[in-house]
Image (cartoon, rainbow over all chains, first blue to last red; front, side):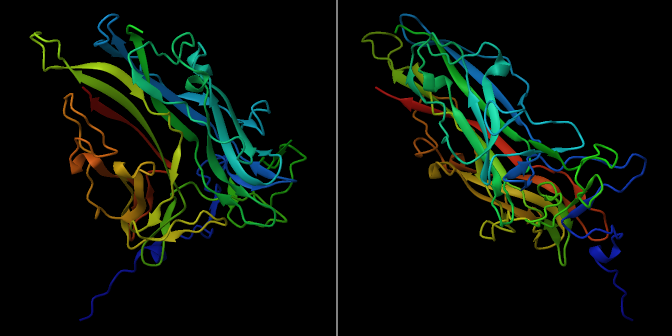
Length: 214
Length: 221
């Protein structure tokens, strides 16, 4: 006697009324209906340039501290800064001095200046006293200039080195860096290419040195 | 300049008609007449013909490296001669955020398609869906050499092994003082489950970010 096999997934799924790639907030178990923004940094065509939905940069920095003896140049103590929570930087539009993105819901799309590759940029100013200011700018722009400039490496040594304090043995490129992530591409008469669809996270660790004979 | 595109019908009055009510979005991209258009969230799961489907998402990663330098004590007649001491410390340049676009089903599968309107990628079967990535340190600067979405736990997961406390030269990037288990690692995170005759469960709904820290040692004269 043949065995009756139950049909697999899709046929048994309730009809949502929406094909793939199409989602709806009309599932209103209670009023008001679901109202939300699109995903972070959603791109679309605008009037004379790309548009971008709200998204934010979330960042944090750990620090490890190594203390060298003042005469021996040998490690005498090691420690660590407090484990910090997340910091949030709300991007501005087009440049570091542009208007900040609007986080209110319903969503506001932000018009950018032109079409092309869209990047999220951020810069560091590690010697700022307030931790929250150590990422001092964050913006969304069209075009990939300036290039990324990483915070410079630290040569192995024993002299004082503290990126948070500019009077120690640091150069500007140890404290000031420029980073970016490509969000996607919006070209005229082309389909949008969406690379990044989440808030952007950047979490790193820094070495600090104190003491030493030189 | 800003345009409100997802405002409720009563606010504000000059909001252009998007053809879609609030909370309602569409993947159909029309350049000349752009309604609200975007993909679902990263790694959105749905049913396919013969297996799960997954929307585009990407893997981002960040690596920090701190360097320690040791020497061997040779003071002549010191009782500590032959011991090691750490005399210097440094750090590689501070990395930004690196991106790896996943492939489908395996490390040799097709790359996920970032174009819009959205393309859902059909996977090979139903079940738990994972994002898997593999890093190989001596392939710097790539390091994350593979990243793929697969159904099931067919891939063997191995953490990059820990480093024994010592003062010997140790560098995962050039293999100095390392074992093979310390030179690579394979990881995964569960995106969700798409099972026949059951509702989809979605665990991750954003791009996946992974940030880690490495130690290097050098033993000099």
